[in-house]
Image (cartoon, rainbow, N blue to C red; front, side, top):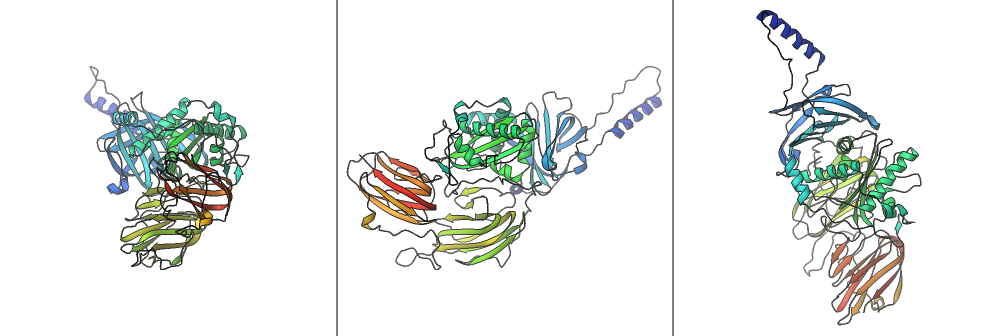
Length: 602
């Protein structure tokens, strides 16, 4: 470690008086300090452990909250004095500065006297994200909320051990998507996915840095996927060659459609893009300094990732995904359809850090079935509480409106902005979708106070409503408010909805409509295959027992209950050794759909 200020060495020669030596020393020291600013980069800030965030204690040795001294770091700073901890002071020397759009700039250099070190700071809107790498230790500086940052001291060996020993969620070769549609348009498989290359060196380093961020916070690691690599690299090259910067290419194709065309059969997806950065560390710090991009990097819904880099113009793309039929990274209970994309295609040029600690309005209690209006400015938050009674079932909270608002529902108090981003836990859900139409469901909510927060990702307005069921004495589910769509299915489908082996049934569905069918499987039957093909977006559910709607909404993959919950209306479910007896089938119109339903078995 180097001290914060380096004084010139004093050499004593025979015949020089001590007074003369003292004058020379003072002169040299004063000249050096006059040329070099000596502001420490950080000031201690009060922060609770909860505010600093959950980390892997085997990797993070210690962490503390700080505020940034604005004039201690600028594009003109030749030296930066970095007071990381009370016993760790470093002096960094500037190598070069990079600038990007929206006022973002990167300061890149080295620690004095450490040739193998690297120092990167990315500054935007008064917040800084930085990394300092040394042979044995690494330091992360990350923004938390307005003015507050966290410094984390990381054991490099322990971090590498975690990356080496962990098994990222397995990825597979690109899958052909037959008759696929995306947002109502046909998808044609592109040939570049067949010739996708392994990671380039810069892409590999971004992939490693991404998984380091996830490991530090105890998250599952992402797997590199060849189709996503091809899609990401093609988009970076396309932006460079055609001089544009957008999630939507010049042919009008969104990130999700480009991933499908590369051969990635997706169920959830997201994308980060950047331009103007020449090093993996600078682009990763730029993304970690933006709440929306950081939410993608740390998202719990994704299993796979591809990174694409084009050096001409410094264009970078990260494509995130989870494949159809994948439910284990971790198992999402009520994901959204179409897949969530936390990245705004037209993000504000200067994202604002969410305002900390919103205060609930005492008048914002949500009663069963009551609709309340909301109006939010960009980055404003509004809180509600729900008093869930004993034995309540199917707690459902829904927002609908215009703009882009995000819904958060949690059993315990919501910690803002630490809880920013998507969540899908038993007692905490946040879809984090585009727009202001979101819904979350808790099938068996705990009794007591539940907390609801709406965040204005952009200016938005609309309505919020919470409903739940109260079982009656007869044991049948009931609701003291008008039922919300989708309506629960009829328990016993009429006999006309009985499927026979190999027969086809044409089914028309309006948005949110459900239709039920059943089939009687004989003893010793094998390879039950249920298929739908058609237009629009219909979802197929096949279950050995009765389907409970809407509790069973979403993807499933168990031996006796399957639902792909894919985009479009082309789905196939296979049960190799099905039990004999009655099987139940439900079709749900996620949008208007026209499909052909068929079941076969041997």
